[in-house]
Length: 113
Length: 116
Image (cartoon, rainbow over all chains, first blue to last red; front, top):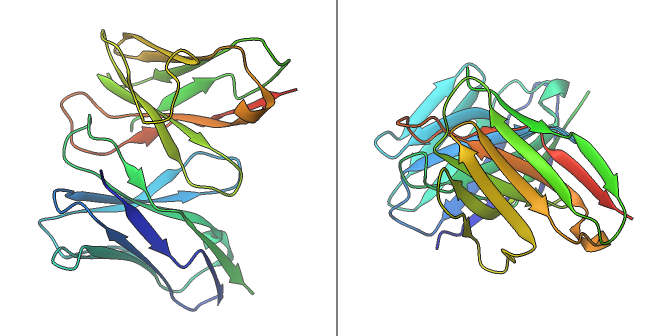
């Protein structure tokens, strides 16, 4: 089955700096890679996703890159703000809504003033 | 959008009792729903895949007789924790994807179960 590793487990940055979270996956058949943000006691919220037919996707301050050959993908947050503080999870899956997500272990991001 | 609700949002029960958690897709039909368990400061661990009209598929190590899943319609899946024990205390979250849609999973708000 799929195995997703995520680093770092905790990340502290100053407001305005950039944050980068990296994930690797094991199953070369995986082709959909979402990123979720989870605040304490709340549901994971999809913030960005990427499919294997593209190498990069950007949405305002958030971007994701994918290297299929190396089987790793990364989340980039620029101009971080205190409200970006949360736990971020990467995930990998195959196509279709019946395909189960395998989550990374999570990164606790703290944005300090 | 795609909204998933869960009920109850939290429940406290005595050891040995059973607890039912409902997961509903409010504005879309979900042929498949997923149930996750999340312990404090840990990641989401998939427990089972719930298929409308058929038996659920359980992940390795998850007892199907303890965690009963029923997916009676395209908008409702239920998880029943039978004979709950303190070690079952956790945050249970469901997710679903649109039937015929792509890969995006939409998560419910979660149910915090505390077993005394």
